[in-house]
Length: 472
Image (tube, rainbow, N blue to C red; front, side, top):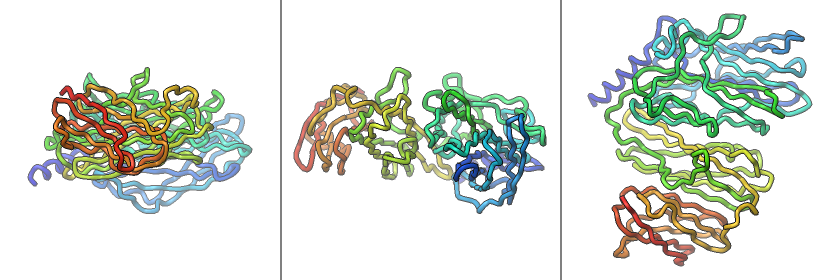
């Protein structure tokens, strides 16, 4: 108990406020078209509960960015109360409805004083406003809403441990998106926004600085010092090669030194295939069912929960589905998707698997992203027919591998690992699985060096047995 009190005291010190206000942990503004020129604008703001109470109202400022005409308006709205977040953070939502006067490009802005004086990666944070904006092109004759972030922010990181987070920007209109890390903005009254002074990226180890994967959107970082760090994530929206909008998310991340958690939970990515860019990637032939099981484990036997998010689940037609199982020291997530021909795309669909680990008074969150490429069925020559189990890869393995197989119809599938004496040592799956391609991912690091058998049972009948060699 003494150690927990010490950690809470440390967090309180790092969350400490200035004499003005320092409770805002992050947020974003999005704009959704209702019809024609009418839009619903939503501000989501995150507050640490150790700061002052959240502002009861927020004022949306609107302006036309086209210099050939001038239009400006503002609207003040109340929040609907707080929603529980994690790690001493609350979520507040303010919603406005606006009808723009004509087609054009508009800026939506919101700001409040002030940023947390404890932020260490800008010069004078206590004198900087917290500023958010979104840019939206309005055309009553066509559909256009701003992009959104499918994943909630992550506000806690552990010193000298990998931080991995994907905001997962998504555009329902199918517009192209580009994302980047940028300098957070402040405001100077009606004259508009300015970059905060003296900003640098959060301090990180040389082996893994605070960086963004331009293809997946995943942010990775190994923090090398404690403190509050601010970051800003910009998403630009393009249609026909022309920029038509942008949104940004600001996040404040608290780095703590939790010496009790030396064995962080991890999503087991061993055996996941990678593409030429080095990102995890699967090719999905259109009209073929695809099923995937992802497992995470934890050396401390902490309570783990998993989720999945990404474009395939947000599609308005023919979306992917997932189910999860939580537990002490282990959690899993099953996804299934049968993409149709209209979803063949040169661009990848990104899915981020999120593992949440409840350790003492804190909840740690990590994301791992897979790119899914939907391709024409003719592009895959090796599609199996009927009930067929393909080869384990990689094999030999260090305990992490995947087993692909095809089912002619939906069936109850059991996959078990047996040692050289024929004794069962692990069950990788025992559930109903869909027809089509299926992949079982395993990361059973408890398997000792040796030779094993992997048996696949379909509806109670053994379909195949594969040899598995564990080298470590």
